[in-house]
Length: 187
Image (cartoon, rainbow, N blue to C red; front, side, top):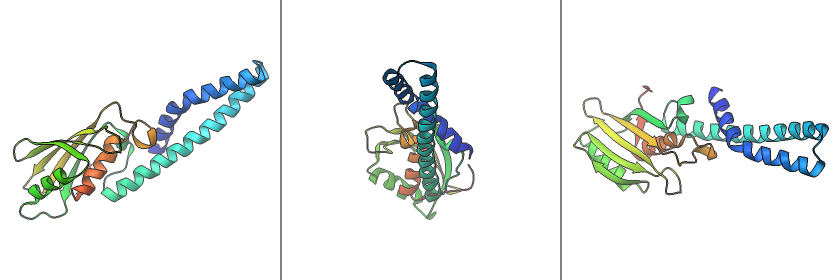
């Protein structure tokens, strides 16, 4: 519920200029009187409040579905610009790190993949259809069979449903799916 309210605040912040334009346009059409101002203000608040709540509910549902698919924790932190998750390989047998690297380089969404020794790989990931991407790194722990994924979004992303938030989490879910990694239960 807390995440839905955060999504709603983000949607209201994005849509508030449109609400102001509608309010001013209504006042220009009907005249600048106190009764018209009250009526236009109530109408604009109700209309845009409802639209932004529906928009936020759509974003919340989309994030929830992605979270379940990837097996990641679902909380208010999904809207953070930086996501760090400890994930486990689906197949922890000999060579699992190399298979994970191969899946990363084979992905259409990954580019500028660079290995920083045997334990770390840095890359860029394109979570959407646009050219915008997030910075990422994979750190392997061979003894426990886990991968620490760290993703950071730039400021230019539109994010989930245009909320300007959640891009890193969407990318995290995509990386987990493509690399066949699952959540370990540790945030």
